[in-house]
Length: 434
Image (cartoon, rainbow, N blue to C red; front, side):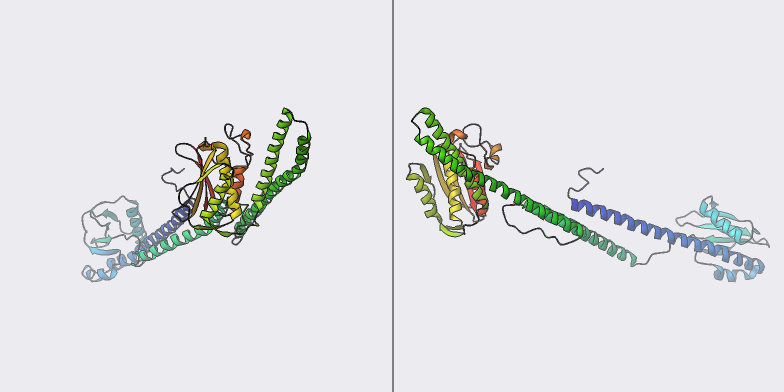
């Protein structure tokens, strides 16, 4: 119905435009009806004056001697017509409906005693003349100047401007009241994070708005409950699996050495790592026990690098590290350890750097020169149990939970996590602490 260039894209603008146009049209219609009513009233007054007064005036002039008629002409005239003794001005026959209506009114007023001829006088002003002959043969002209609508007051345009301003203001206020709850609902939906105990959406306002807010809050509670239940099931299964895995491991160790035993021990090790990562993931999702503490970044990063270097791993710190951070130390250590473990698995070496962003946030990056991750899979790589089909697979010992755990813990410390492929090859995983 509307082209893309004419129809606004936002709901707020559309409702405002619809209400404004509708109210403006209704107001214009009312103004037009009032205008027509004034026009019809003015016309009725004019024709009524012709019908009532002209008959009396012509009768008086017809009975007066010719010499006395001139003194009464000014008194008998009205605002929209006057009497002229004589044939009047030359004109052209008038065939308009208005002329026929005026002629009919005058003829009806004088009782058809005097034949009347209506002519229109050429000019800029709408002017008619009715010519008749009195009983003594004297010509009489009725000069009629039909008037339209009565003139409006000088202050009326200003009132109209004020009314239109009030109309726009009230329309804007009504649209704002109607759209604001929808905007708040959209903002709450964008900020929805069942893992965080954020404020509930306000349930104040009209009944429809309150009902929608209550439904949203209940939906949020249900989502949080489902997620918690899912993680609890994962934690329970992972915990319960540890005992039979341990028994199987003991029995395998007691068996005679053989290639099958080595394969069995290897498989049991993978299962045990998967169970441990499942428990770690469950704890990261609902582990709120750790308190924030102030840490020295240089000492903290160096301790992580030294722990890996002591076991012969190629982990280095690049650049100058300085400053302090207020965060959860154990959660941050687990995040960076997961990044470093991934880098060591897929590249054999890792680099750690610490920088300050333009917003003065702390950005800690763990970089490698491995195969990286395809750009269209970077976001999926942080989902639980995600593995790539090629280099990053089960053969490397991964369970697909390392980045998911890191993401969960990053949310707990109030930071943000980002993966991106480095120029020249390799992957960079960075955590931002605000």
